[in-house]
Image (cartoon, rainbow, N blue to C red):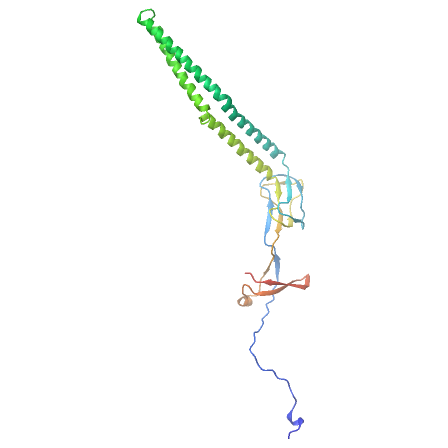
Amino acid sequence: QVGSAARGPTVTVTHAARREVVQTVVSSGRVMSPAEVSLASTVGGLVRAVHAREGERVAAGQLVVELDDAELVAQVAQARAGVLLAAARVTQLRAVGARVADASEAQAESNLRAAESTWERQRALFRTGSIAATELESAQRAVEVARSQVQSARVTAAGSSGGGADARVAVAGRVQAEAALRVAEARLAQARVSSLTAGVILRRSVEPGDVVTPGRALLVLLCDGATELSVTPDERNLADLRVGQHATASAEAFPDRPFAVEVSA
């Protein structure tokens, strides 16, 4: 019987088993917004007011910059007057012009009948030798002139009717004036810059009194939405990364507040 001293010390052993080895990849990066939008105006002019500051949150559709719009307001008023004038022209042509043209046509036809009647009398007198040939020729020319006046009156009446050329020109003028009004109203609306989406103002590069040109960025907006972390891992670790892998991130300012992330690209 061997004593306890001869057996040696008692130790704890563990059976070998196959397990996964966890490799940790540590990389730094920066937080990125879903999108940065430059707010600008498509018209130039004097800046009248700025309603947002850096770091301020704005809602979708919120007014942020106003340009001086006195000239644009005058252009809208001028365009509206043009629409009224064109509409009055159409009404006048349809209500008054058509009646005048019809009356002129009736008068021309009456003159033609009178000229033809005179010519018939003159022809009968010429046959009897009571008048000279020059008088008969004069009556004939009067008939031709009256016929020409009738044709001209009929063309004018047709043009003044609803489907005539003059009526179509007047209607086209009204449509053109209405289009000019819409253009003027659109330019007036462009003097007021609004945020297309909700977000936070990142940069403000305009102040009241500045003269801006069309397309110049006045404010830069960080759009609301899911943020992203842009990191540049070491090249040796690229083979170990996969889309959909889960990871843990933390900001240097808040190291005790980690949050879960996922590899998206």
